[in-house]
Length: 382
Image 1 (spheres, one colour):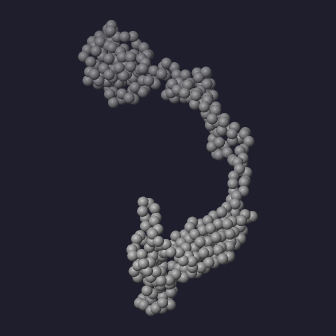
Image 2 (image 1 turned 90 degrees about the vertical axis):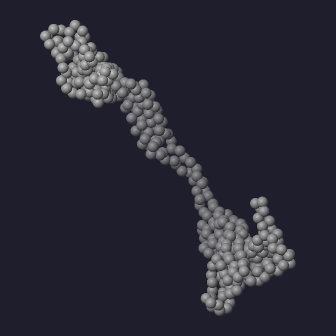
Image 3 (image 1 turned 45 degrees about the vertical axis):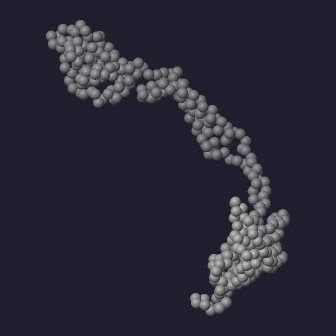
């Protein structure tokens, strides 16, 4: 027969027997469901949208200015490119190139038509809204039918005479007699784009702006371009969903563990393999109490009872309580425990030695029996 588990384990199992049975039954149910879903039931098929093609176009500006005269540190003819700031006196004319970047599945080119205009306005923020006090829009150039291949394509280059723009702003302000708000100068590129993705035609528009800010002797340049325009084509694809590892492997493991645990509990209970005898239970309780009360117990020879009255306690805990309340030590020797309070010797015998009570603590010095001693027998520390 398989050796029984330690008393502590059997005691705990008996205390939690119903709970453990419920846990095992639940494990069998959960493990069975996961196993059925992963190994027996037909795999699930889902339909997903899969991208088959993409089409993207975005715009940007490149700008440069040529120095028109010698001036330390520049020389006439020097080319300044893509700077955030230019000097109006030596680089009054700004060359702006509008560039489109195109990417498409199949590398089919697109076609672009762009209208360039210079917009000068005076604006002011009020109550969370932009108020335009005055606005002048001047067409600069119209470019039609530009083929935009995959990659970067320069659509057109236009010139902006920033010095002339500054003079015009001052003339408008002089005519109006005031300068409300902030003056804004923008080169606007309105672009219509046509293209093709797979068998689908694409028609879209975008507006990109290059912002100029003329100041006393310099002007700054910054781009405000629209986000890339993207189109996609998709197709429906059926896909079989494979069970996750938890379902595939965890299910059988949980099922086996639950079934095994339930079998052990039921067979162990019916065969007596998990039973705890009264003697085992008494010894187990004593062992726990002895460990908890170790700090109150000293090992030494227990003196003879002599003329003292003998009183036996039901548990080691009772004996230690008496000793603590009386401020007396507890003495242990060969499984016997004693404490002496006045003319009374309190005794407790551990369960494993309770069948043989030592006579020397009961008999007096002359060998006569103490009529107050209780009968010997097993003590259970409860």
